[in-house]
Image (cartoon, rainbow, N blue to C red):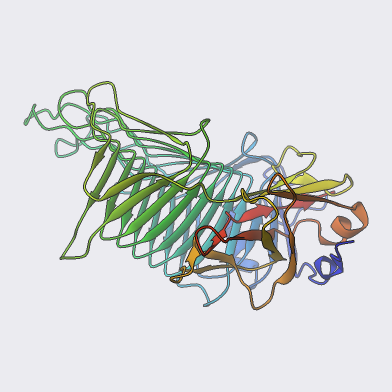
Length: 413
């Protein structure tokens, strides 16, 4: 029997409740004053409503009541997190986030910080083509989210470019079960032959790993559409099944390019669909490798609640497809994310902080799989806390440890 008693160790620190209607038990009616009052490590629970954007350098847990009913709409960025304490992670879950009408604003901006983004819909600012997520010198984990760059309306004559779903610079990035969409471009009012659409994902001098994600470039009506993935001076790995799609918007779907002599590479794993756009039959440009062995996949299955969390009063199932029959594997779980790049004998990064995680070893079954039920008496004490989990399989045929995605789940009562 798997011993998961370690899951009951962490406790919530200070908790603040935000309710736009000032309902019973609430402490604030908007997010900025709640963020200002909170201390590092505190949790902010946000009830249904529409709230102002905020900027912070604190490490907080900010949990909404669900992306369909809880919105953060900034006059500038919806959320900006910068220069937070090292080795700590800001956690945001259960929101729709939209950048405001100010010029050059993304939906979420992350600088020199770490963030876990769960169960959110994020949009770039509406006035020019801006990314949904902009991350510089950051570590980002995204699960079950949709990130959509803004289209470019003819507001500024110099603007003809749609925004990226996510734009990364000097960052580490992992995403699972998420969708990235570049914004559409617009015919330029002066230079009618120049129009650019947003890329689904821009990986600049960064490392990115996608697991079972869909990525689409934006549409450019005259000249250039967006790439699904535009990677320069960095490395991108996308693993998925035949249900997942990478597709350009009138441009090459996968575009890898060097920058200042540093190469950029894109590698796909498994039967993920890499489709050309309707207006351009080019799938790949640059050092792109297709169809490498699929990465293992880890999933935590339970009864979902409206805020995106799983019901802690109901049993959950941890299911791991290690892909190699009867192979040795590890499973680890904890409350802190990490991003350690793989070495020569490992494919895929370690995404859970191994120094503080619980670690279990075992052998996969004849189908190459492993699963177990998590009883409710384990989940109830940790409601509200994201649990990070990852697994890996030793593939003797390749002589490699093949690591899975990071599965990040919350449990609520």
